[in-house]
Image (cartoon, rainbow, N blue to C red):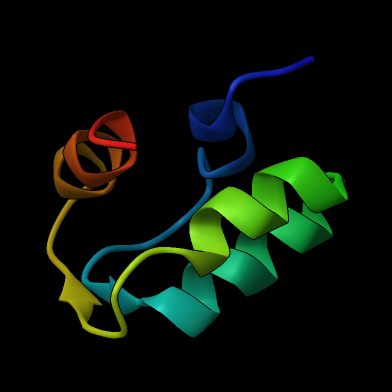
Length: 58
């Protein structure tokens, strides 16, 4: 399975969780990836590093 970050390569930061989900879905992310992104807090994300750090805490 591709890593979450591969589905977020085209995301323009800053963005919110909904935008992360939209971009990942548009890049073909499966339900597992979308589910992981859906666990993120509803907030604005300044960079991919922030997203990856939060996902790494799961």
